Length: 217
Image (spheres, rainbow, N blue to C red):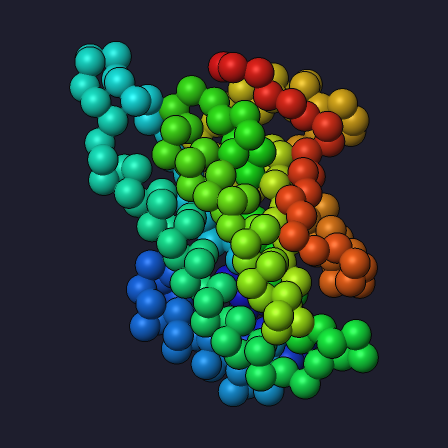
């Protein structure tokens, strides 16, 4: 529904392709379709992700299901890298700017990579992997004029919060330095625009969290 709204709003300058990032054929097809529709790719915002909590040992003493851990890694890390590798192959063919830039990769990680909470071992590990990719990707792709950045959102007003009750959300937001509210999609979008405009930003991980630092809980 949201994708259709964008297509209508921008009168054909937006195209949408449904893609499972764990299916490399779908990834390759979607990237090729985007290049065919628009001629080139200048920006990738890699934000596909999943999050569901489970303790390493349950209250019944059962160990964390390994497939649960693998699912987070497959979607949030392996899927992200698969999208990146296909997109940068297209970006490398772009005519460079006057500075020699051919594109920008922005990967979404999470503050959970730094301060993962109880039940977030799988999710935090997958997002820490995204942060770990940032520097080597930037160094590797700098040879092709492609910059790489990671953004770590704090508590954002997205469907991922549907599993949390309001009391939990209020408790987390109260830890913000300022402003004491949930992050909004526009906050992320505005930062991405700044990353595009400021070409001296590269190889960096940026926290977008109103100064929130999560303690154990």
